[in-house]
Image (cartoon, rainbow, N blue to C red):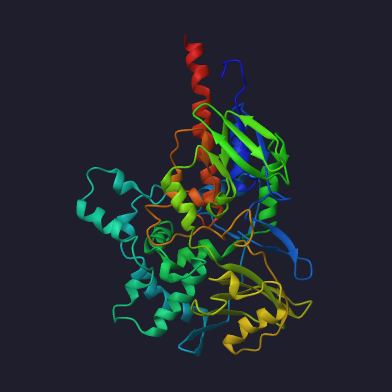
Length: 455
């Protein structure tokens, strides 16, 4: 690259990570182009009108001031937040029996379980946004390293199967984490839950507040559209990528229509579940290919359900039930209706657009919920995501997302799936990854020109 040539970067994907990276690169004087396979921006964040025209989040929803990257953007663009409603009644299922109490009862029961699941989080993650810190520190006690590595084995619920906890308690934890991992708890990495705890001051109440409490008044759309408005380069929608040729000096990207885009670097923001749709030359390293082939633990769903009447409820059920977590989100007094949000561990267990399917799912709690509408987006079946938010299978904390952090070429991976902090589950990680990759490329692309001018 000549020192007189403006460096260029092609960004694949117009979600939070891609938009943030574009804004950062442009501020450094780098030419940026964005190609997006979908007909909209936002990625797995998507505010859409459903269930009678109500603005609902099909993907990412909750934010918090303790998530540093997203809170910076909320502040930058003058966005406001509001809380999800407090809940009156709680229901949970164990061994075919529906239990009833208050939300406080449910939280209190979960708190004891979470303490056991979170055990080790303080020593494993002294710096939660640098999760491999104790491995990088040569002074770390070797015994701690061994325990750290072993904590990525087995299931997130194994620690509860010691005889100390009842089946009801285990089922309650299974309900929570089937929703949280968006997949089967049997294959869920125990270490991911401990990392979430570390990001939440090792408190289950704060973790719930960060992941299920506060939403944007203007929706996620209000934030991602504000960021996009600050991007000067082209954002080409309906433009999928089929092949990426990458070298230490540049990239050549083939689009689905056969046209070719060349640039000094490419930032690929596709989730792990969508990487199988792209051909790479040279092929990706074996470690990355293995992660792509194995996929993540994220095979679940999110559904919005509108029911007749006012219902202030939260409900849980173990992973073998279609919906693992259900809670009231909007009270529509003028319609005499309530909108609830539900999460489950298997996207094939429910038809997101079928009132009958949703009714069968909520009937397991034996209440008086009458479904009058429902909807959602099947992210697992979506070609351009192939999964919901990224959660880790057993063994993937050390042999998963981190395999995409280093590269010998100008191909870089960015997105929530690859973040070091809030990996996968919230927008904060996507923004973090976009900034980190952009700043690294800025330093790299400026280096030749700086060397030349110094001569």
